Image (cartoon, rainbow, N blue to C red; front, top):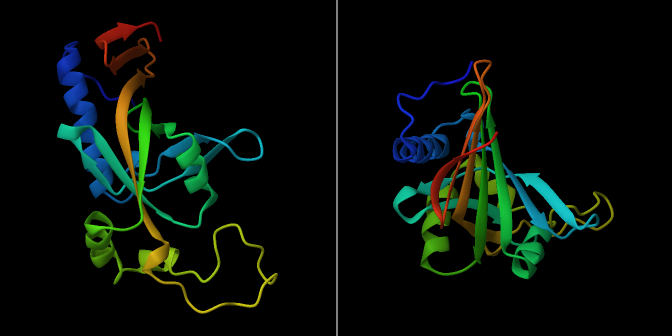
Length: 186
């Protein structure tokens, strides 16, 4: 069921999209909480995976997710920091594509403070695995449990928002970027 907009005002729509992103980061089960991150690299030249949206800072247009510092995606991000996040909400009938510039941190206050909040939760186990992501099981002797050194923070600075609403009454699409906000052909 598509969500209707109270207005055709692009400013109101952009504010609504940021509100929805903030809600997604705070709400388990929200469709936009687990977007697909597509990066350059990998065996096919491109790679995509689901990430968990952890934080959204609307005023600075920044999204945050976490990863294992041993993951192949870190080398991909370091080599090509431009990426796309894709989100779909069947409830809203909305797709959101975000063109982003990625940044990586695996040390410092920003990482330590986030680890302090995460380390006592079940999610911490994702970063304490003794083996790097993608390691064949049974191929190596099981090393000691990992440590916080494998926890990394990825920031995604939003450069472009491409919103598409699918609606039986007519699809609508808008883009928000450095050139401003505009309606475009769906």
